[in-house]
Image (spheres, rainbow, N blue to C red):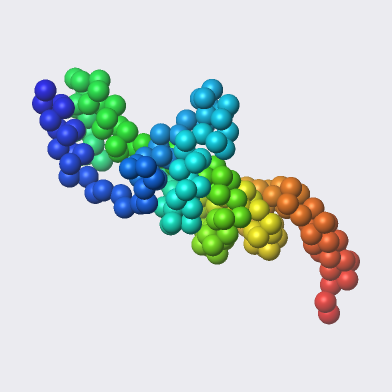
Length: 203
């Protein structure tokens, strides 16, 4: 009983996320509930409930999705976490509830990439912010941002072209693959120009 009370208190005091809603559920709830490999979600594709919610929320959801792209690693376990988990460990429900509350957001990054794919060109207003994230110092988060740019579509081609010269290997690779899908002719012209410049360097 004590474990349940502790989790209930933590949930009550935990800062609430402010994100748009669809049919009474926050976008964060739709994203967290999405199961990418469930047979039902796979069979329905872009017509499954979470995809419908993402399209209905539209550009109002972009700030939240950008926040999700910035999530990569599990947050460090603090002394408070250790103390709470010791209390709730006697109750499986309470333990799982606290674990989800504390670390459940970790998987939002990959799910946000899928959400950007659902939106496609509708997510174009997010391109400038995603470009900044992709060019940042964190390679894992930069890769996630580049993947999001790829699935937005052709509006992201100029940014992807710049990212082919990024210092981070996974970002360069993702940007190059994105251009191969979206605009292979642009990539060929870019590579040809680079080859010419190497042969004829400026004096």
